[in-house]
Image 1 (tube, one colour):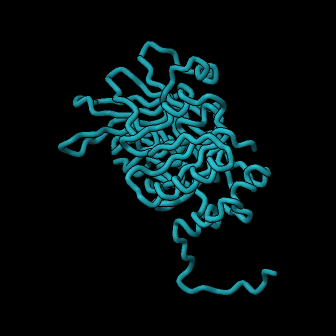
Image 2 (cartoon, rainbow, N blue to C red; image 1 turned 60 degrees about the vertical axis):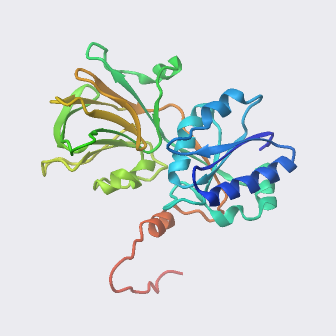
Length: 313
């Protein structure tokens, strides 16, 4: 990998990630690399300015923070194919990030990157649009992404649920898959997740954990008022449509990776499908294991009594 122009983003308001970003920026600049650096957070989005002001192709984005900071980078950089090195400094779980100790030796990191001694993990993303009632359902959504008018992109999940400042509101949603009505849900909302997002909001809503190497969509109702409502795992070519019903307070929203995307008005529906673009994450860990990540991050403790497996070599 040639490193001529690099984005360095850090978690807004976090001093540890800010110091790590400044240290990394100084080192990369000393190697002759042009740096675009800024904070990323709920009220800070540096990526549109970075992409608009770049004088040449961006070779890499180094992101210091947690999963939320990495998700924001993926949403904005995946369309341009920019690889992301996410480092867990100032974050919490860190499913998408490299451990902080992996970047302590910046000489080693630089040699690994410029010597192509790393792996690239590609992760499926979701695209969504708001459609009026008279807009035809999608039979082949892939061509729609070329129009440039689809701002709703998510790495973890698309979520349809209401929001109110003064009370908790139940949602009434109808689910269609490839034009066929599947079910109606009364509850807190509906999730459409990627395999990456299956270990986030989806697993908290009792959805399945799906390996990120798979291409699939996971539809999970949030606290449905029906014991028969269950998650559904769909093939990647599916188009999921969600209709809000009985929304008298006009409170239904579309959320992408936990960030408010747009309001949904009566008569509109949300179409969700697999995006053509994928997020690209740099892996520096030579012994990376997704299953060890699950064990460590989810604190899987096993049985109360631990037995040694003497049969394993």
